[in-house]
Amino acid sequence: MSKGRRIRASVAVAAAGTLALSACTPPEGTDGPDGGADDIQDLTLATGSTGGTYFTLGGEIAQLWSDHIDDTQVETFPTGASVQNLRALEGATEDEEEGEIDQVELIMAVNGVAMQAQESEGPFAEEPLEDPDDVYFLGNIYPEVMQVVVLADSDIESIADLDGANVEIGPAGSGTEVAARDILETYGIDPDEDINSFDSDFGDAATALGDGQADAAFGILSVPASGIEEISANNDVRVLPIEGEEAEELQEADESYDLMDIEAGTYSGQDEEVTTLTQWASLYSTGALDDETAYELTRVMYEQADEMGHAISDQVQLETALESQGVMELHPGAESFYEDEGVL
Image 1 (cartoon, rainbow, N blue to C red):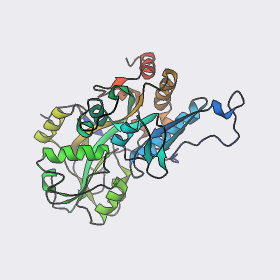
Image 2: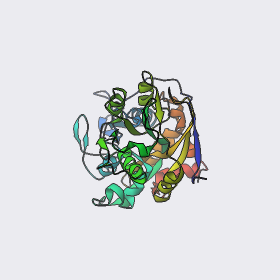
Image 3: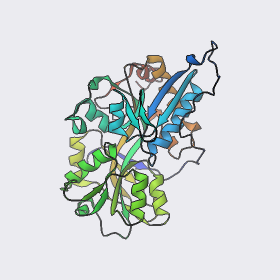
Image 4: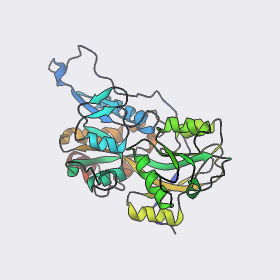
Protein backbone atom coordinates (compact mmCIF):
# COMPACT_ATOMS: atom_id res chain seq x y z
CA MET A 1 0.00 0.00 0.00
CA SER A 2 1.38 3.38 -0.98
CA LYS A 3 1.86 5.86 1.82
CA GLY A 4 -0.11 9.03 2.37
CA ARG A 5 -3.68 10.26 2.43
CA ARG A 6 -5.45 9.64 -0.87
CA ILE A 7 -7.69 12.39 -2.17
CA ARG A 8 -10.33 11.91 -4.84
CA ALA A 9 -10.62 14.72 -7.33
CA SER A 10 -14.07 15.79 -8.40
CA VAL A 11 -14.68 16.49 -12.07
CA ALA A 12 -17.51 18.88 -11.29
CA VAL A 13 -16.73 22.37 -12.52
CA ALA A 14 -18.30 25.40 -10.88
CA ALA A 15 -20.05 27.83 -13.20
CA ALA A 16 -17.54 30.15 -14.72
CA GLY A 17 -17.78 33.80 -13.77
CA THR A 18 -16.01 36.90 -14.86
CA LEU A 19 -12.36 36.60 -13.90
CA ALA A 20 -10.82 39.54 -12.11
CA LEU A 21 -7.22 39.22 -13.22
CA SER A 22 -6.02 41.89 -10.87
CA ALA A 23 -7.55 43.99 -8.15
CA CYS A 24 -8.17 47.54 -9.19
CA THR A 25 -6.60 50.51 -7.54
CA PRO A 26 -9.11 53.12 -6.30
CA PRO A 27 -10.23 55.66 -8.90
CA GLU A 28 -8.25 58.87 -9.04
CA GLY A 29 -9.53 61.30 -6.47
CA THR A 30 -11.07 58.67 -4.20
CA ASP A 31 -10.62 59.68 -0.59
CA GLY A 32 -10.19 57.54 2.48
CA PRO A 33 -12.39 57.94 5.56
CA ASP A 34 -10.43 61.02 6.64
CA GLY A 35 -10.52 62.60 3.22
CA GLY A 36 -7.16 61.40 1.96
CA ALA A 37 -6.24 58.70 -0.54
CA ASP A 38 -3.16 57.93 1.59
CA ASP A 39 -5.47 56.15 4.06
CA ILE A 40 -5.78 53.25 1.60
CA GLN A 41 -3.51 50.30 2.42
CA ASP A 42 -1.97 49.00 -0.81
CA LEU A 43 -0.80 45.37 -0.85
CA THR A 44 0.74 43.29 -3.63
CA LEU A 45 0.19 39.57 -4.26
CA ALA A 46 2.74 37.68 -6.37
CA THR A 47 0.97 34.92 -8.30
CA GLY A 48 2.37 32.85 -11.20
CA SER A 49 2.55 32.67 -14.96
CA THR A 50 -0.37 33.93 -17.03
CA GLY A 51 -0.98 30.38 -18.33
CA GLY A 52 -1.50 28.90 -14.86
CA THR A 53 -4.09 28.77 -12.10
CA TYR A 54 -2.21 31.11 -9.74
CA PHE A 55 -2.64 34.15 -11.95
CA THR A 56 -6.39 33.94 -12.56
CA LEU A 57 -7.41 32.61 -9.14
CA GLY A 58 -5.00 34.99 -7.40
CA GLY A 59 -6.66 37.88 -9.20
CA GLU A 60 -10.07 36.83 -7.93
CA ILE A 61 -8.83 36.44 -4.35
CA ALA A 62 -7.21 39.87 -4.53
CA GLN A 63 -10.51 41.33 -5.70
CA LEU A 64 -12.31 39.69 -2.77
CA TRP A 65 -9.87 41.30 -0.37
CA SER A 66 -10.24 44.70 -2.01
CA ASP A 67 -14.04 44.43 -1.91
CA HIS A 68 -14.42 43.18 1.66
CA ILE A 69 -11.56 44.65 3.70
CA ASP A 70 -12.01 48.31 4.53
CA ASP A 71 -9.41 50.73 3.15
CA THR A 72 -7.39 47.95 1.50
CA GLN A 73 -6.52 47.46 -2.16
CA VAL A 74 -4.64 44.38 -3.37
CA GLU A 75 -2.96 44.18 -6.76
CA THR A 76 -1.52 41.08 -8.41
CA PHE A 77 1.19 40.46 -10.95
CA PRO A 78 2.48 37.42 -12.86
CA THR A 79 5.79 35.79 -11.93
CA GLY A 80 7.71 32.56 -12.37
CA ALA A 81 5.77 31.34 -9.31
CA SER A 82 6.93 29.59 -6.14
CA VAL A 83 10.72 30.02 -5.95
CA GLN A 84 10.68 33.54 -7.35
CA ASN A 85 7.79 34.49 -5.08
CA LEU A 86 9.54 33.31 -1.93
CA ARG A 87 12.60 35.34 -2.87
CA ALA A 88 10.35 38.29 -3.65
CA LEU A 89 9.26 38.50 -0.01
CA GLU A 90 12.80 39.67 0.78
CA GLY A 91 13.14 42.35 -1.86
CA ALA A 92 12.35 43.64 -5.33
CA THR A 93 11.37 41.13 -7.99
CA GLU A 94 10.45 41.14 -11.65
CA ASP A 95 6.90 41.32 -12.98
CA GLU A 96 6.75 39.23 -16.19
CA GLU A 97 5.02 42.12 -17.95
CA GLU A 98 5.76 45.37 -16.10
CA GLY A 99 9.36 45.00 -14.92
CA GLU A 100 10.60 45.51 -11.37
CA ILE A 101 8.17 45.51 -8.44
CA ASP A 102 9.54 47.16 -5.31
CA GLN A 103 7.49 45.49 -2.60
CA VAL A 104 5.62 42.22 -2.19
CA GLU A 105 3.61 41.55 0.96
CA LEU A 106 1.80 38.36 -0.09
CA ILE A 107 2.68 35.38 -2.24
CA MET A 108 1.22 32.15 -3.55
CA ALA A 109 3.58 29.16 -3.47
CA VAL A 110 3.58 25.38 -3.40
CA ASN A 111 3.81 24.30 0.23
CA GLY A 112 6.67 21.90 -0.47
CA VAL A 113 8.77 24.65 -2.03
CA ALA A 114 8.06 26.93 0.93
CA MET A 115 9.29 24.18 3.25
CA GLN A 116 12.47 23.89 1.18
CA ALA A 117 12.98 27.64 1.52
CA GLN A 118 12.49 27.48 5.27
CA GLU A 119 15.03 24.66 5.58
CA SER A 120 17.45 26.01 2.90
CA GLU A 121 17.10 22.89 0.79
CA GLY A 122 16.44 22.15 -2.88
CA PRO A 123 16.58 25.35 -4.97
CA PHE A 124 17.53 27.28 -1.81
CA ALA A 125 20.50 25.10 -0.82
CA GLU A 126 23.16 27.15 -2.60
CA GLU A 127 21.40 30.51 -2.29
CA PRO A 128 19.26 30.45 0.88
CA LEU A 129 16.88 33.18 1.88
CA GLU A 130 18.44 35.82 4.13
CA ASP A 131 15.87 35.12 6.84
CA PRO A 132 13.90 31.94 6.07
CA ASP A 133 12.24 32.08 9.49
CA ASP A 134 10.47 35.27 8.42
CA VAL A 135 8.23 33.40 5.95
CA TYR A 136 4.84 32.92 7.59
CA PHE A 137 1.99 30.61 6.54
CA LEU A 138 -1.54 32.03 6.31
CA GLY A 139 -3.40 29.02 4.90
CA ASN A 140 -3.95 26.62 2.02
CA ILE A 141 -5.74 27.78 -1.09
CA TYR A 142 -6.38 24.68 -3.23
CA PRO A 143 -4.82 21.26 -3.97
CA GLU A 144 -1.92 21.50 -6.44
CA VAL A 145 -1.91 18.34 -8.54
CA MET A 146 1.10 17.17 -10.54
CA GLN A 147 -0.29 16.31 -13.97
CA VAL A 148 2.16 14.91 -16.51
CA VAL A 149 0.24 15.03 -19.77
CA VAL A 150 0.80 13.19 -23.06
CA LEU A 151 -1.40 12.75 -26.10
CA ALA A 152 -3.63 9.68 -25.82
CA ASP A 153 -2.06 7.97 -28.86
CA SER A 154 1.50 8.43 -27.53
CA ASP A 155 3.72 5.40 -26.89
CA ILE A 156 4.70 6.98 -23.55
CA GLU A 157 2.97 5.02 -20.79
CA SER A 158 5.00 6.00 -17.72
CA ILE A 159 7.44 8.61 -16.43
CA ALA A 160 10.26 6.14 -17.14
CA ASP A 161 9.35 6.27 -20.85
CA LEU A 162 10.28 9.97 -21.02
CA ASP A 163 13.96 9.10 -21.49
CA GLY A 164 15.02 10.85 -24.73
CA ALA A 165 11.74 12.74 -25.11
CA ASN A 166 10.97 16.43 -25.58
CA VAL A 167 9.56 17.44 -22.21
CA GLU A 168 8.14 20.70 -20.88
CA ILE A 169 9.18 20.77 -17.20
CA GLY A 170 7.88 24.22 -16.26
CA PRO A 171 9.34 27.73 -15.93
CA ALA A 172 12.68 28.01 -14.13
CA GLY A 173 12.09 28.52 -10.43
CA SER A 174 8.48 27.38 -10.50
CA GLY A 175 7.08 24.70 -8.22
CA THR A 176 6.43 22.66 -11.35
CA GLU A 177 10.09 22.68 -12.33
CA VAL A 178 11.27 21.81 -8.81
CA ALA A 179 8.87 18.86 -8.58
CA ALA A 180 9.46 17.73 -12.18
CA ARG A 181 13.18 17.43 -11.56
CA ASP A 182 12.62 15.44 -8.36
CA ILE A 183 10.14 13.12 -10.08
CA LEU A 184 12.33 12.49 -13.13
CA GLU A 185 15.36 11.73 -10.96
CA THR A 186 13.31 9.30 -8.86
CA TYR A 187 12.45 7.44 -12.06
CA GLY A 188 16.15 7.33 -13.00
CA ILE A 189 16.07 10.15 -15.56
CA ASP A 190 18.57 13.02 -15.43
CA PRO A 191 16.54 16.12 -16.44
CA ASP A 192 19.71 17.82 -17.76
CA GLU A 193 21.08 14.87 -19.72
CA ASP A 194 18.40 12.31 -20.56
CA ILE A 195 15.62 14.49 -21.95
CA ASN A 196 15.29 17.57 -24.13
CA SER A 197 13.83 19.91 -21.53
CA PHE A 198 11.90 23.12 -22.14
CA ASP A 199 10.78 25.74 -19.62
CA SER A 200 7.58 27.23 -21.05
CA ASP A 201 4.69 28.27 -18.85
CA PHE A 202 1.87 25.74 -19.04
CA GLY A 203 -0.14 27.72 -21.57
CA ASP A 204 2.72 27.56 -24.09
CA ALA A 205 3.60 24.02 -23.01
CA ALA A 206 0.05 22.91 -23.76
CA THR A 207 0.25 24.47 -27.21
CA ALA A 208 3.58 22.71 -27.86
CA LEU A 209 2.08 19.39 -26.78
CA GLY A 210 -0.97 19.83 -28.99
CA ASP A 211 1.23 20.81 -31.95
CA GLY A 212 3.48 17.78 -31.50
CA GLN A 213 6.53 19.88 -30.56
CA ALA A 214 6.58 18.37 -27.06
CA ASP A 215 6.04 14.74 -26.11
CA ALA A 216 4.96 15.49 -22.54
CA ALA A 217 4.28 18.44 -20.28
CA PHE A 218 4.57 18.67 -16.50
CA GLY A 219 2.20 20.98 -14.69
CA ILE A 220 1.28 21.52 -11.05
CA LEU A 221 -2.30 22.58 -11.66
CA SER A 222 -5.81 22.46 -10.34
CA VAL A 223 -8.14 19.61 -11.30
CA PRO A 224 -9.61 20.05 -13.79
CA ALA A 225 -6.98 22.27 -15.38
CA SER A 226 -8.18 24.67 -18.07
CA GLY A 227 -4.94 24.30 -20.04
CA ILE A 228 -5.38 20.54 -20.27
CA GLU A 229 -9.06 20.93 -21.14
CA GLU A 230 -8.06 23.20 -24.01
CA ILE A 231 -5.66 20.58 -25.37
CA SER A 232 -8.22 17.79 -25.00
CA ALA A 233 -10.78 19.79 -26.97
CA ASN A 234 -8.79 18.93 -30.10
CA ASN A 235 -6.52 16.08 -28.97
CA ASP A 236 -7.34 13.26 -26.58
CA VAL A 237 -4.87 13.21 -23.70
CA ARG A 238 -3.69 10.98 -20.86
CA VAL A 239 -2.20 11.82 -17.47
CA LEU A 240 0.77 9.62 -16.55
CA PRO A 241 0.59 7.85 -13.18
CA ILE A 242 2.97 8.55 -10.31
CA GLU A 243 2.52 5.69 -7.86
CA GLY A 244 4.13 2.63 -6.31
CA GLU A 245 7.73 2.61 -5.11
CA GLU A 246 8.59 5.89 -6.83
CA ALA A 247 5.68 7.71 -5.17
CA GLU A 248 6.66 6.26 -1.79
CA GLU A 249 10.25 7.43 -2.27
CA LEU A 250 9.08 10.93 -3.17
CA GLN A 251 6.78 11.05 -0.13
CA GLU A 252 9.57 9.91 2.18
CA ALA A 253 11.83 12.67 0.85
CA ASP A 254 9.16 15.40 0.96
CA GLU A 255 6.42 15.37 3.60
CA SER A 256 4.31 17.82 1.57
CA TYR A 257 3.31 15.14 -0.98
CA ASP A 258 0.03 13.23 -0.78
CA LEU A 259 -1.54 10.79 -3.23
CA MET A 260 -4.51 11.78 -5.34
CA ASP A 261 -6.78 9.94 -7.76
CA ILE A 262 -7.89 11.86 -10.85
CA GLU A 263 -11.20 10.36 -11.91
CA ALA A 264 -11.69 8.74 -15.30
CA GLY A 265 -13.27 11.14 -17.76
CA THR A 266 -11.79 14.27 -16.22
CA TYR A 267 -10.22 14.97 -19.63
CA SER A 268 -11.16 13.78 -23.10
CA GLY A 269 -9.14 10.62 -23.76
CA GLN A 270 -8.42 9.87 -20.09
CA ASP A 271 -10.52 6.73 -19.82
CA GLU A 272 -9.14 5.36 -16.55
CA GLU A 273 -8.59 6.69 -13.06
CA VAL A 274 -4.98 7.72 -12.55
CA THR A 275 -3.00 8.17 -9.33
CA THR A 276 -0.59 11.06 -9.02
CA LEU A 277 0.91 13.37 -6.38
CA THR A 278 -0.60 16.47 -4.89
CA GLN A 279 0.65 19.32 -2.73
CA TRP A 280 -1.05 22.58 -1.74
CA ALA A 281 -1.07 26.02 -3.24
CA SER A 282 -0.69 28.14 -0.11
CA LEU A 283 -0.63 31.77 0.96
CA TYR A 284 2.46 33.22 2.67
CA SER A 285 3.66 36.56 4.00
CA THR A 286 6.25 37.85 6.48
CA GLY A 287 6.23 39.06 10.07
CA ALA A 288 5.98 42.63 8.75
CA LEU A 289 2.31 42.03 7.89
CA ASP A 290 0.32 43.32 10.87
CA ASP A 291 -1.85 40.84 12.75
CA GLU A 292 -5.16 42.57 12.04
CA THR A 293 -4.54 42.58 8.28
CA ALA A 294 -3.41 38.95 8.34
CA TYR A 295 -6.58 38.04 10.25
CA GLU A 296 -8.81 39.81 7.72
CA LEU A 297 -7.03 38.43 4.66
CA THR A 298 -7.39 34.91 5.98
CA ARG A 299 -11.01 35.38 7.04
CA VAL A 300 -12.18 36.88 3.76
CA MET A 301 -10.38 34.28 1.60
CA TYR A 302 -12.39 31.48 3.21
CA GLU A 303 -15.66 33.21 4.15
CA GLN A 304 -16.20 34.88 0.77
CA ALA A 305 -14.76 32.17 -1.51
CA ASP A 306 -18.22 31.38 -2.88
CA GLU A 307 -18.29 34.80 -4.53
CA MET A 308 -15.52 33.84 -6.93
CA GLY A 309 -16.34 32.55 -10.41
CA HIS A 310 -13.18 30.49 -10.89
CA ALA A 311 -13.79 26.82 -11.66
CA ILE A 312 -11.91 25.69 -8.55
CA SER A 313 -13.08 28.34 -6.09
CA ASP A 314 -15.09 25.65 -4.27
CA GLN A 315 -11.76 24.04 -3.33
CA VAL A 316 -10.81 27.06 -1.17
CA GLN A 317 -12.07 25.61 2.11
CA LEU A 318 -11.51 26.37 5.78
CA GLU A 319 -11.62 22.63 6.52
CA THR A 320 -8.38 22.06 4.58
CA ALA A 321 -6.69 25.36 5.43
CA LEU A 322 -4.01 23.87 7.69
CA GLU A 323 -3.36 20.50 6.06
CA SER A 324 0.33 19.69 5.41
CA GLN A 325 1.48 22.86 7.15
CA GLY A 326 4.76 21.10 7.91
CA VAL A 327 7.58 23.19 9.31
CA MET A 328 6.05 26.54 8.35
CA GLU A 329 5.10 28.83 11.23
CA LEU A 330 1.56 30.17 11.21
CA HIS A 331 1.22 33.96 11.10
CA PRO A 332 -0.12 35.18 14.49
CA GLY A 333 -2.98 37.05 12.82
CA ALA A 334 -4.07 33.98 10.86
CA GLU A 335 -3.66 31.87 13.98
CA SER A 336 -6.12 34.13 15.82
CA PHE A 337 -8.67 33.63 13.05
CA TYR A 338 -8.34 29.84 13.18
CA GLU A 339 -8.69 29.91 16.96
CA ASP A 340 -11.86 32.00 16.67
CA GLU A 341 -13.27 29.51 14.14
CA GLY A 342 -12.41 26.50 16.30
CA VAL A 343 -9.97 25.10 13.75
CA LEU A 344 -7.14 25.28 16.29
